[in-house]
Amino acid sequence: MTEPALDDLTIRRAESPADYLACQDAQRRAWNLSDESYVVPVATLVGANLHGGLVLGAFRPDGSAAGLSFAFLGRIGVKLGFYSQLTGVVPEYQGRGLGRRLKLEQFAVAEAEGLACVAWSFDPLQSGNARFNLETLGATASHYVADMYGPRTDALNAGIPTDRLVAVWEPGPSRRPPLPDDPFASLPLLIDPDGPGARPVGPSEPVALLEIPPELAALRAVDLDRANRWRVAVRSAFSSAFEAGYRAVGVVRGGGTTPARVAYVLHRSP
Image 1 (cartoon, rainbow, N blue to C red):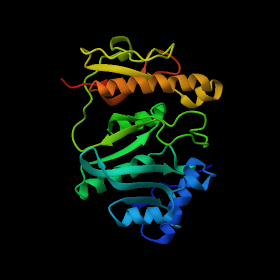
Image 2 (tube, rainbow, N blue to C red):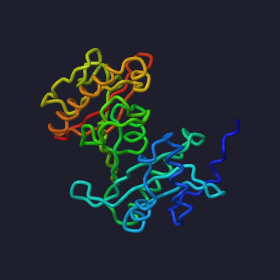
Image 3 (cartoon, rainbow, N blue to C red):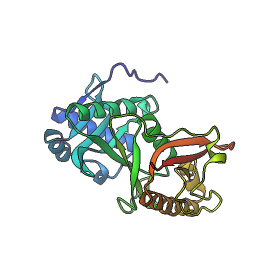
Image 4 (cartoon, rainbow, N blue to C red):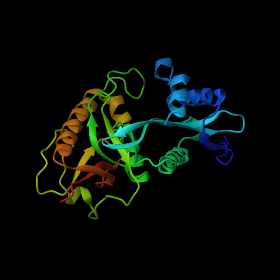
């Protein structure tokens, strides 16, 4: 089947009632939502968009939306910025760079409006999202929220606590330190992949790795209990590391295994 053209899309701020409804439909399709309580109401989208927030759509010529990004104005620590509640792309456009284009436009609007940063949350066990957020977009993370949304019934979250890392994008150079050729063999690991159990962070380690499952969906499908043990171990390790002054600044893959091992790069400045 021929893929729909990306060149036909226009990424812009939502303006009309039809735009908001198209963004709602994109939410349903991007996450395959059947529970309407998970869809952001039009009134919320409009209110945020008119009063400091941002609702972006990737609109087709027929007015439908291939993707959306929704952010509201908030305080990220002591800084004023966008908090991006969601960014999603409908199935036929996924994996083609549209999510990145939506996020980059969000960053550009934030800068143009004089905001200091853009923050959003994601599941720390989702390795694809971790690589996209920290490697492709250049965000960092130093805040962990346990069970942020409580129990959920959708396919991505059912049966496991909804822990989230808060990613923050700020203008400026990368904070990622130089890494050895084989990080898994050279750097300390804060998670025992055979346990999994959290290990304490040593005070003399400026860079460490925090390993996660390479494919959470595959693990959940065969061993939900083990996925939950990973959740607890990663929660403990991140919480301890952040308290010790570390920041997640990147993601590495390797280890000579199939599938490749995946780990966050944690860095603590002197």
